Length: 96
Image (cartoon, rainbow, N blue to C red; front, side):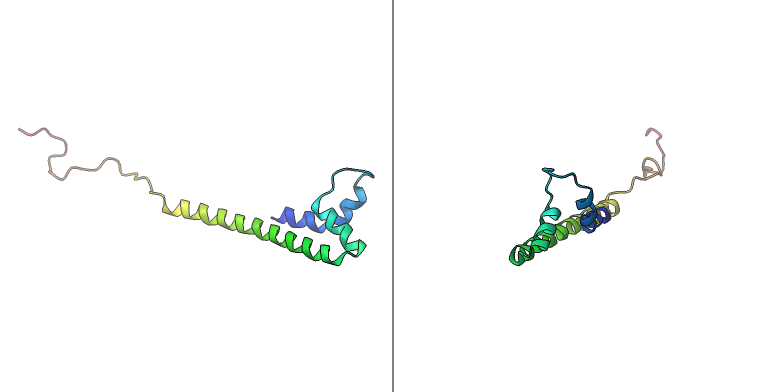
């Protein structure tokens, strides 16, 4: 999650090192261009899409952590005591 946040923050630096004429236009590059060209309606809609994507990533991570904790604490714990002891008191002797 931290890597995603850092990649969205460092858009200006990535624009500086991007080779001229490259065909790899990312979503954040598109948003950066729209913000500097003054297209307000598109910037607002792209920001909402970006917010929805970030919320989806956070929700997926939270569900994954919750599911892992649920699985970890609800699975049966294996017994280390060995096989159960019979209640007859003879402890494995054959009946006469």
